[in-house]
Length: 401
Image (cartoon, rainbow, N blue to C red; front, side):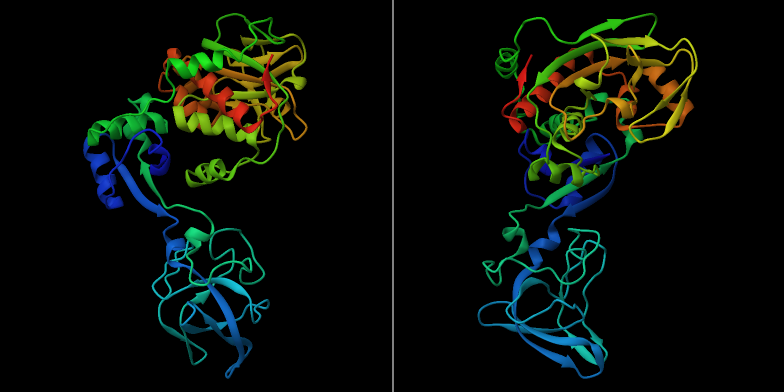
């Protein structure tokens, strides 16, 4: 499991120290850290350069010698094959000794007989995009010599990769909030508690208190332990803010849209999974929690058709299953670009039943791994309110109904 120290710092102050030493402290006190990486370190070494001269390469028709300013008084020269390089262009420059995100270490070497003093970088070489047709062109207002860390308003982040097996007995550590509490104990620093009773009361006041447009019905001997639901209207689906996308990317999740990203963000922060429905796609007045009575096929969000058997717990509407409880939502219930009404679901499920279904299907998800650990039902409301908190922040026109 990847943990972002930048995220952890929302809840506890961590002293500046060598990243490897930080990982060792967590290993010795709590759980084994398999690897420690620093994200954004390369951006601190890469600076803005301005091209001032382009010459043909004496030994290669498709290469050119590019001279550029790295400060107002210092120039360097590299061998460059980018088709879009031009005089006056501002572009990222990686000096010798820089390690790029793809693992390439820039070392002194001759290219067709000419020494290159580093590299002018493309977006793909910087890890910004998967493909690029040439070097990256920066805004003309970029200051020569400024680091990309400052130009992009980025910050470095330490990522610690914690061995999942060592956390099997600690469901409280399957989110950044719980990890922060552990670091608070390690360093004897104050643990910040933003999600206190005052915070909860302020969010409860935003709930109408009237009759909900969506009801919940439980049938039979299901895997359900607890269930919270909340309906919100006026949602606008769009791109998540950069801070949220960056944190999700750093810990290995691809941003999708603001609503889906909120569900993943809260799970990774508080350790309790949740699901967000497009309410217009739910047929009937209720969602129904029940064990299946017969075999059914069910298409999950990953677009795979799966065979469910009697006893598997699902959440259904009047037309059939919408969610495979504790494991993954269905393709027919997910949030889309035109979604305006949502139903927030925070549930808790019997760990043995989730584990049995997940193992049989060969489908272990971020959700199922957490539910298998026996989560605390008393923390469900906090998870629901934190989800509402972010929905209202990213969709200012939204309101609880």
